[in-house]
Figure 1 (cartoon, rainbow, N blue to C red):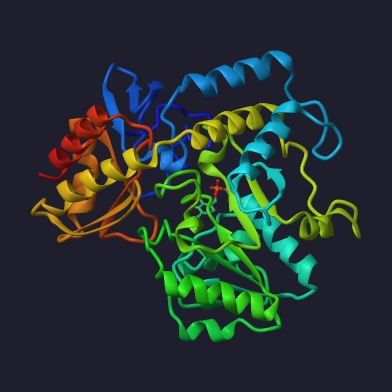
Figure 2 (tube, protein in one colour):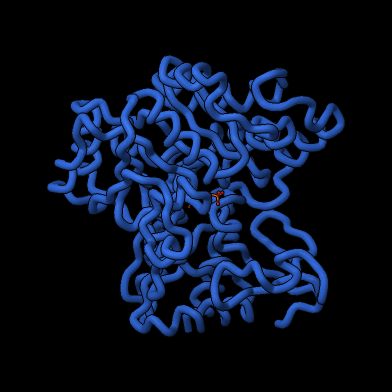
Amino acid sequence: MQPENKFGSFLDLGLAATTPYPLNIRIESAQGVWLKCEGGKKLFDAISGVGVSNFGHGHPDISDALHQQIDLNLHTMVYGEFHHKSTLSAAERLTSLLPETLNAVYFVNSGTEAIEGALKLAKRITGRRKMLACTGGYHGSTAGALSVSSNLERKAPFLPLLPEVEFIKFNDVSSLQEIDSTVACIIVETIQGDAGVQIPSPTWMKMLREACTKSGTMLILDEVQCGMGRTGAPFAFGAFDIAPDILCLGKALGGGMPIGAFVASRENMSKLSHSPVLGHITTFGGHPVACAGASAALGLLQKMNWTDVERRGELWEKRLKSHPEVKEVRRIGLFIAVELKDADAVKKTILKGLDVGVLLFWFLSVPSAFRIAPPINMTDEEAEEGIQLICEALN
Ligand SMILES: Cc1ncc(COP(=O)(O)O)c(C=O)c1O
């Protein structure tokens, strides 16, 4: 569809598509697992706005919390000066779900800003400059986050980015030798999202943690996409029985509101408070309305029934694997990549999905697969309806 406006926002002018095949869907409203488009068409949201609407659209707990906070106040002062109940409540709920060592939360405005804050914090804690990242990793689009992301094509026009960044192979034991006492941090997506739901081995994760502890290197886990219940647990690192030094969150954290966070120990986080005063300044960080959304979303996360999530994930995996067009399914919880036998069929499947009534989406870096990440609180009936639509799109 061609953009209708001659003068408009970057998006309205048709300049903001994230893939060569812009969907250009006009949304009227959204409820639960359903997106309602202008003209009356309904789409099952099988990607949750790319990992944001983990609790569906318009959840009453989230809507009520937002309305209440809007009636109280919006922005009052730059982050770090005033206290708001919603910010405190979001931090309390978040830390209640994390290991004791992760007890200091710094709220920012997006996933990519959480990564920026985490990289800066690691430099402050260690006094070192060199940073390691992993092949296949995606961490955002601002200069620091792009520097530690691995897709060269996306970086090339913006070079030079941050110096002293090196890449090691994700999930490769011998590469861990690179982690030594010269390295400030290594940043790793616990489950790689953009690379097509790549799940590391428990052994590699344990060895990664050990190598960081031994060399005093900060282990930064990026759970912007795979956190907040996506993998069938509150946070993905729990399944590996390790904890990061710094955890980055975003996307689903705000229950649909824009917010990110980096979390560390209070002792480590205190390094950012002085010399210079507040080493990461943000006007809107900890915004009371975004935090009201986060607090409500975290309240839902605390109450999730993980057995239900896994049962629905298993059902979708089984049905997808038995489809003749499907080559491989990678899944953890309700985070799913579907590799097709014919890579050209990815575009056809996504476009046919729009016809039959289900929203699927590309991975930025994996042309042979499409992503599935439905709301984790869908009911059994919705799960059945959703997988039927996906199979119809694949037919
Ligand atoms: C793993 C990961 N980290 C960081 C980001 C950046 O988050 P945002 O786009 O909210 O800035 C993303 C976004 O897709 C992501 O998937």
